[in-house]
Image 1 (cartoon, helix red, strand yellow):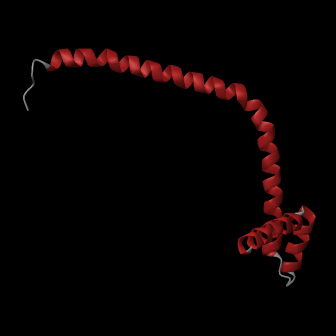
Image 2 (image 1 turned 90 degrees about the vertical axis):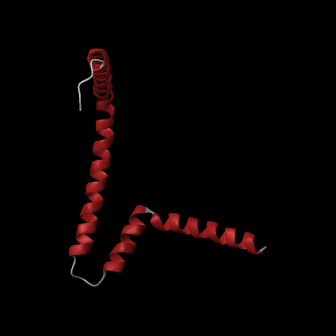
Image 3 (image 1 turned 180 degrees about the vertical axis):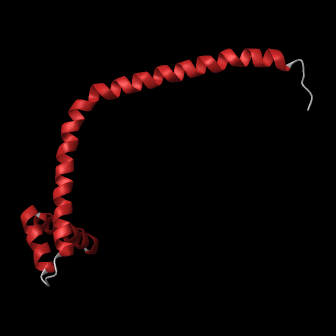
Length: 105
């Protein structure tokens, strides 16, 4: 492969273009970091709340998995009662029943 004399001006023009692009990317990254720092404080408290909720759920699951007793179904039902899942399931089954009756009728 021979070196063409036309390559010198092409490289001479590419260097400033690449520098401008890199400078722009740096500026955009700084703006993104600044925006992230500005909005990080309110999200932290919300994330802490979600983290605590997930830790509680993991603790319950660990108790269920490590429990050697045979009453796992009873414990799951107790947890459902505690969180009100039965109400949500009942509402969902009523919705399904209404949809089925509408399809039949």
